[in-house]
Image 1 (cartoon, helix red, strand yellow):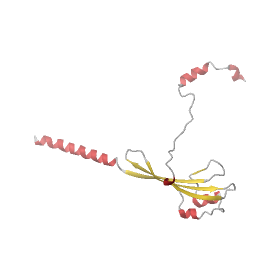
Image 2: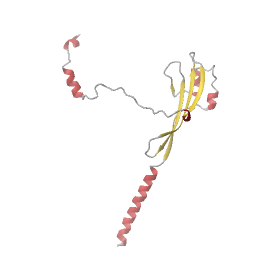
Image 3: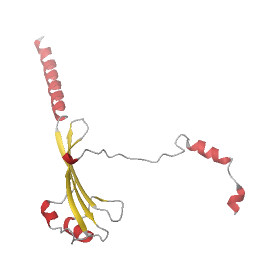
Image 4: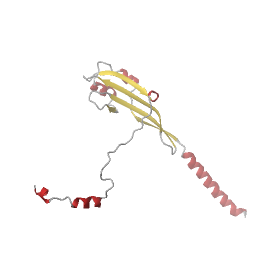
Length: 155
């Protein structure tokens, strides 16, 4: 009788151990870095009132993004995200360097912001809605049959 319970106990212990390993491995914290911000030494090389857009790109690299308007600034953004198991990733640090230019393209100012200077802004994807979203392909095809005008094809 003890011999038949021994394999059952071994199987249960193995299953329990496997479940514990899976549970612990799902709770691993991973940090990921996104983006690029120039070092303070690189930024010290930029002279306000003297350097231009081209010399800034040459000194510290191309910006992560730039302003919409022609005369707006360069923005360098770096974020550190914490991924913990199945939970949603969380921003633990964010640094933004803004380099502003005047109308001539000369550096007007350099500003550095951190996560403590603002709030986390969620990025979202916006898509223009379509007027045909409720219609199937067949319904669109059959709906256009009555609108066909042979005279417009010949013109």
